Length: 239
Image (cartoon, rainbow, N blue to C red; front, side):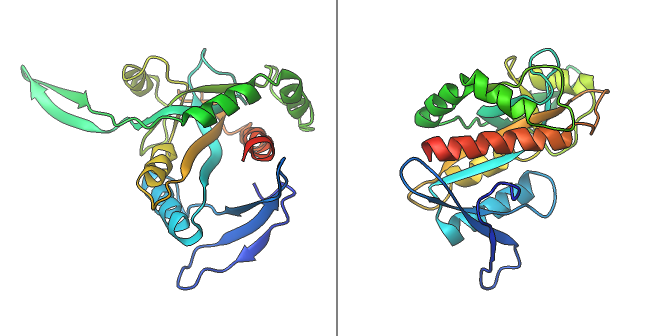
């Protein structure tokens, strides 16, 4: 995010040890103000705590999380930018025993994308020429597949996932799932329960690997680049 040309400077919040950077981004109406921060560790708890602190300190109109996620093989391509619509904690439910066998009875609370943000991001997803320009500008050699923006379900959980059997269980919760991550639901839940006026929560993540045994870190930098380019274009056109 800080590689974007948004005139970043450090901002200090009294009595808060968090590290925040403030910048401005160009938009169609006027320059917008942005504050960026990174949670101190992975997971929904750390992401939700950071998002909550920022909601109260800065009172943003939008809370946008960018990052990387594990995609569902055969549904998304490496490097694809996925936007959460809907999102839930795949570990929410009850473990019990039925007829002598253990089972997990899922009870997800799903958080969707706002209608306005959905329409805007669907429009941006149709900009194939621009997306191709983003892909070709990655000098280190992008994946062979074209770059796309995909809107759909993202499931969040506490663990790094590299197991097809576990992934199959998550896909049974929502057959249209695009990707798995560790933070998105926490950020959206913080936005949903935050102070009034309620901020709009948006998750923009790029597929850096497939959430199975073939998991690799080889295109994390490219994935980080693509989701941040989508963030910059989305901010300029719509925020």
